[in-house]
Length: 318
Image (cartoon, rainbow, N blue to C red):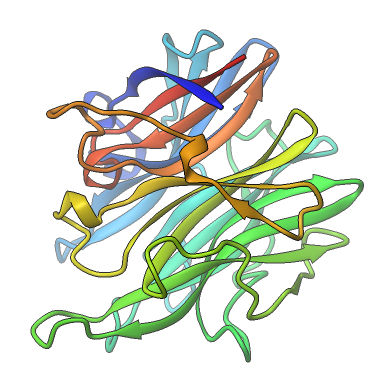
């Protein structure tokens, strides 16, 4: 596959976003309409104690994916209440059409003491074309379990032949990589299926995507799209420590291919996105989302500092 980079298309610092958010536009996710494309993302505000809260916002773009038509001006999905799995943020969100509704699979997170965060995947429903979403309940539809006890998050859902498929990440553990640093997590990509999008059956403990960096590789934010009668998964991967400011250990975009949704063959060389020093994505490329629009396949993704300054776009050349 040959990809052509179209550049940096959205910078959240240039707009007034709801809930007092001023920076970050992470994990862009597209919902295609007849005459525009809505791109959801997670952005951040500070609470009274100066800690981050992650909120969902969106930007509507012309189908040329250059011209911005509007940005959301109200809450898209409310955060959870005291003690809920999404009390401190939603990051990321994945949207999928189902009949006349739009389903949102939300990745909620809440702060912990011994480790930094706990997560789960929730479900919210929109009846107003994705302007706002109502939560199905206060708890998650997919969360930690007997054989996957850590960090279930980053759900991506695709309906194939009437059955719901979810690719998500599952934590394999927390580890102190340095005695002076807080513990960091390791996670891999998992898979679950459902008849109704609510009750899920996990393929517990299975690892879909082979490691490239060894057992301590972390894989995040899977996205599956069909191209030329094959399924293609895009995700990002990194070392599990010293990745925040060390570009040699930071996120890069990975790729795998499957004919049957079961066996995946990894081929990261199929997604080369070259960079030059000083560019917005020169130190990091992460949180990819592939989607089809008007006969073309596009790839949204974040750049340096985990998407602090927004996201960019590439198009698949035929």
